[in-house]
Length: 109
Image 1 (cartoon, rainbow, N blue to C red):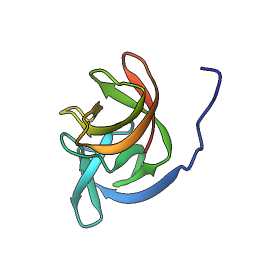
Image 2: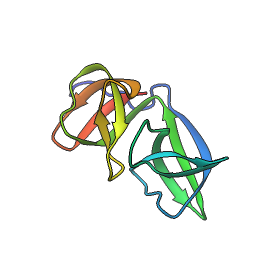
Image 3: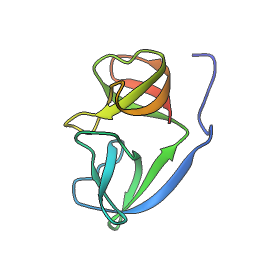
Image 4: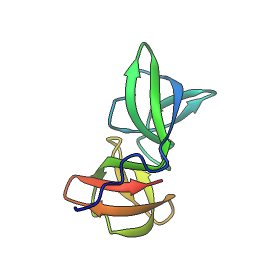
C-alpha cells in the first residue's frame, strides 16, 4: 500500500473492562460503562490498550483489525466472530474496508 490512513478520525474512549477483554480484539458493551470481548453482533470498537481493569477502545476512525473470513474492499457491514475478530456481514456496523489480506483488514468505522 502506498498510502497510510493511520490517524484518520481516530476516537478513543475509556471503559471499565471485564476479564475477557484482550488488546487487539473487538469489544461489545456488557453493562453500563463496561465492555467485554465481542463474540457476536455489532462491535463497539477495537481494544487498543488495557490497564488496571480499564480498556482504551477505538470506536471510530481508521484501524487495522483481525479479520475472519473474506473481507471485500468497499462499503460494508461488520460483526464479530466467537474469537473477537471482525467479520463481514451486511447486517453489521457500517464501515469502509480500505484493504484486506488473509488475517487483517484496514477499516474506517
